[in-house]
Length: 152
Image (cartoon, rainbow, N blue to C red; front, side, top):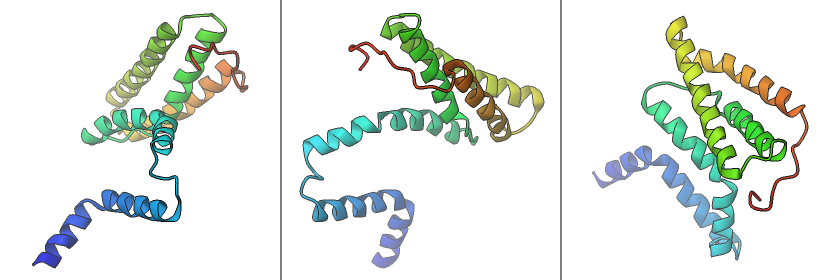
């Protein structure tokens, strides 16, 4: 019976079990893995993934799938960068505009899905390409430089 409970627990928590195994392997094979500095570096370098995953989690809980979120983030990032560098907006206002852009993108996806009567996944495949194109057009397909020290 204990073997069945352990197997059921592992099956239900497979991602956590895999994460635990990876942490144990890296801890045993390197000396600096479980240090405060390394953990903070990992968290800071992946903050955008956590933010995006939070939004995706809400969409998945509703039973839908949205694969356009990556290009929504790209479009919002380009607009935010342009507002700060080209138009000299304060960082806080540019970031609020960035959040507004992503909300508008999601509203567009929802309206298209409802009006056209098709699954959000198919809508997000189409809008993904639109958002990608808009981000390339707005950035002229070049890296945006010249951010303030406050933003860095």
